[in-house]
Image 1 (cartoon, helix red, strand yellow):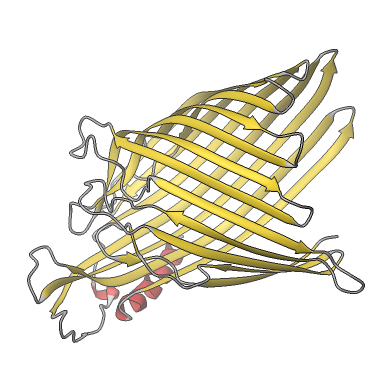
Image 2 (tube, helix red, strand yellow; image 1 turned 60 degrees about the horizontal axis):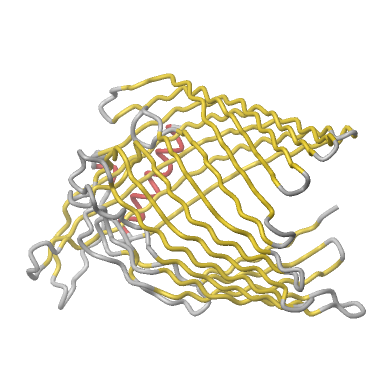
Amino acid sequence: MCSSSRRTGQRTAQAVKNRGALENERTSLSVLFDHDFGNGLKFGANARYSDEDRGFGYVYIWDADGLNPADRYYFANASSAEQFAADVHLQYDADFGTVGSRTLVGLQYSDISADSRTWYAPASSIDYTDPVYTGGLDLDALAPYTGTRTDDSIASIYLQEELTFSDRLIATIGLRHDRMDLSRTALDGTRTQADFNKTTSRLGLTYKITPELSTYFSYAESVLPAALTVEPEEGEQYELGMKYRPAAMNALFTAAVYDLRKTNITRQDTSENPPVPRTIGEIRARGIELEARAEISPELNLIAAYSYTDTEITDRLSPNQGNSLGNVPRHLASVWMDYTLQGQGARGDMTFGIGARYKGTAYNGDDNGSKSDAAVLIDAAYSYALRKDTVLSVNVTNLLDEKHREAASGAITYNPGREITATLRRTW
């Protein structure tokens, strides 16, 4: 892991010399296995290993006094992570007259080692009416100002029981127990280590009012390692919603409201220059989510979604108590449409897709000092069945290469430009 961090740091140093760059490198390997024993008993297992290096560096303007020339600073980060995760489970389905039962029991294990370093240094000031660029910074000659080494291992056992009564009422009860061995090492070598045992629960109720309309309620607890401390991040969510599947067409409409609370989350404090990570005792998020999926015709499909999110920092000890969370837009909306041209003769099926995403304004930091721009982005997709078992897909995000300022911590950043990816997939 240390060698990975050094490699990333070298790439990041070069990025700073180029006055701004972002480099990511990720390798992963996944294995999946399942077997049906019959009589309602199934076994499943999966495992994944990943190795990731990330690095970025840039020079940014800190125009706190509004004067020209403006102050500038170098800012860079290098991080690396190795993770192994595995899951094995058994599922048993059975019917007892008017009651259907589905029982799931499983074991999970994950191990992650991560290292993150951040560099910061003053750069020469610049006349933004007549800029003269002076090059970058050699990180080899500069010690990082902050960094954390993370070593976490988590072993979990979970049990879920789903009961269906007369095909009208569905009740789901779940229990999960996590044993966490967490370690954090600071730049000065100070190591904090702790073991935690936590049992969380989940409850869900769904009632079919009519064959087409159903309503549901869910309650869920969560626990996972926090980013900055060994105290785990904990969450609690309530959700109430409705689902409508009209008999006259192949469509599904859903609406939900939720209330989510989390404790011990890590945020970037943008009131500091440079921004520093801090732990927030408690935050709350409430929102509405709407979604519609419809098959307009056998060839044409439509998906539309909208969400409204209202966040608040409720930690009494935070100087930002009562503020909204930075980098979280209140309004998100999207629409996607795809059309399939059925194949003829030697030509396979072709599918054309196009859609739009709207992201509303968001505060640039938890201090709510400024906001990012709202924006609409256009995406497109195309797929072609070369053979029955082989499909070529091309996806384009931000088709028009639109640029806008995004919510950021401590600097002006812009959204990713046009990105084109091609995938050739074969099944056997």
